[in-house]
Amino acid sequence: MNDLVLLKGNDIFTNSLVIAEGTENKHRSVQRLIDNHVIRLEIFGRVRFEITPLQTKGGMQEQKIYQLNEQQATFLLIKCFFEINVELIGIYVYNNKGGYKLKRGVVM
Image (cartoon, rainbow, N blue to C red; front, side):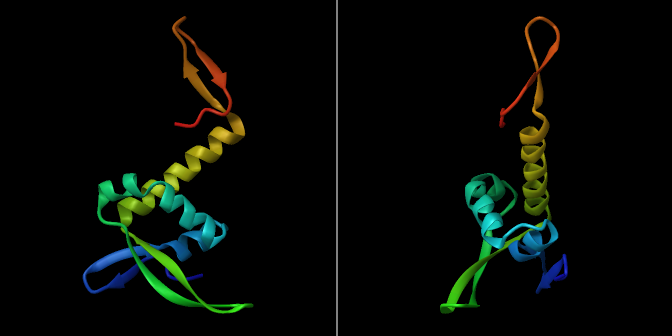
């Protein structure tokens, strides 16, 4: 596994490849997740990336590797965890009768 924390100059970060490997997801899935939440992630700082070469069966291509600071990476992982739990077990929602009701498929 790649190092979880990377250091470049004075910047400490992790990247989308490390997150994909650590969560056993495809890199493209993590890239899409970042793309879908980039506005929220930028609350914690600019979302940076680098373009690197990638050898594929079809030849050499380029891939975008996102670099996330600690707050961005934490937000992304918590968001994923919450969405997975909602999909698996649903979520209890407070109703106006003073109780909670299980609702499935609710995504916040």
